[in-house]
Length: 178
Image (tube, rainbow, N blue to C red):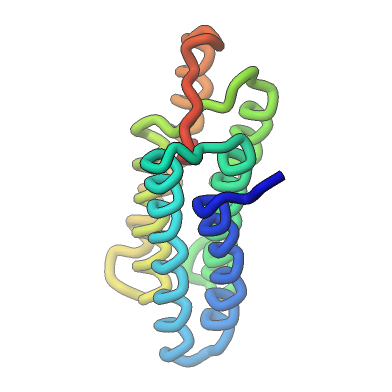
């Protein structure tokens, strides 16, 4: 199995996760800025790998599998660090994790992997914004977190309902995550 450029970019996001976690655990403001920069770099590569996969016609089943998995890890790591820092409650993060497990289980059973709809993209953007604001300890971070949790749950529901309403022959693969 050959790994193409977009998939390598996806895998590079895994290298960002330890930097985010160490930065958050550092206990100094500089650590937060390191964590924020690494997180935003990782989030930016999420857009880049999807763009290149579609633009260069390099969408693969491996990429469709790895991209959402790596995205979940990139989001989950700082959320857990933020729980540890007592900035957000664990039960809010649990709701987001439960949705991710549920949708991953749903996706595995589908005949074709469908890509993100508008709600899934809104979920991703809201999660990235909330995490960035929380890492930076910026005003509005907690409000954005709860908006992200709501969009996470809603997008999961819309993903399942949308796929149930479409025959498998109409589900088109996409390189982005649900």
